[in-house]
Length: 393
Image (cartoon, rainbow, N blue to C red; front, side, top):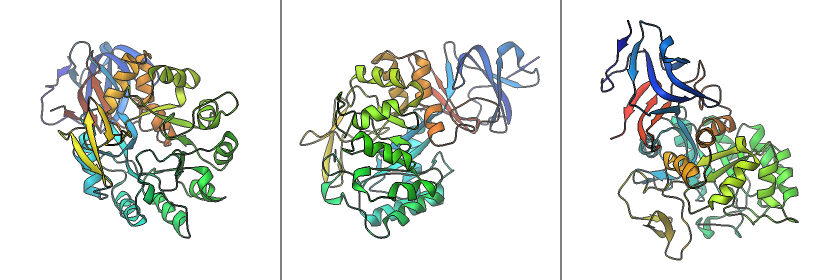
């Protein structure tokens, strides 16, 4: 006879089973099934009636959906903390902790365009903590971006590369799986290739690069596009640019902010129709997420939250008041995407982009037991990290 596991038990046995009405393993659905967890790893997914009798079992509430924990490639802040203000290990931990309640079990804290000294601080912090506390690495967005597409990045800190810059960024190779967003037309020949051959991923963003320049960057190893549709020229029949290349080049994974503000739902559907498995949901989250902040300072500019929209006094969008669970929910409810597409874009796709899809973004045997449980409204009930349950407070 199987043993029951108290869902409120303060400690989780090293070997146990989570039973749910629906389980998405990153690729396909399992109905009336169980995730088997042993020593912080997934031991497999089985039908609920096939759980070994000596495994403690936890029956999740009726209607619960279990999926791989979410992975956020672009998170500027959370819990009242902005990484640019606190580029430390403690700052990164606070951001990751704030987003965990929304199902994010792995993230890249993101530093937007700032001074070289601030970049050095963030890189040093990431090197000390990457691989722990849900921090997979560091995302440096800027400063080598186009001044014609700054978004909310401070124009006085947008820079052209100088001696030593690429070497500094190559230090990210010791910071887990890290990422640099840049404009390929704004860096010298060999810059992208030097980064990628040293194990640093490169994403194209805040750029006006035409398609041929994008393709040269891809040939040099660039593999991502940052917040597709935003801070880049619009697509046209004669000038496909970054958008057209992102949606047709299989070597590129594109991040997408699905908050109902940054990108129209029709454009979201277009992106998924073009390359369903190459779109990663991202939050571009700011300190307001997971906190009561309605206003904060961003590198000298005041940003205000009004009706879910973060903007400067001049009306420029300033990141997003968005968490990953809400991004999944918006993809389904606003863009009318199949739930499996939204869940995959929040887990397996970003994990694959980072080269971590054997251990994250999936519930196949041997993967880390990082999971999220959602109710019928797609709101988070609980998150598991290394098989340990963390309830939403």
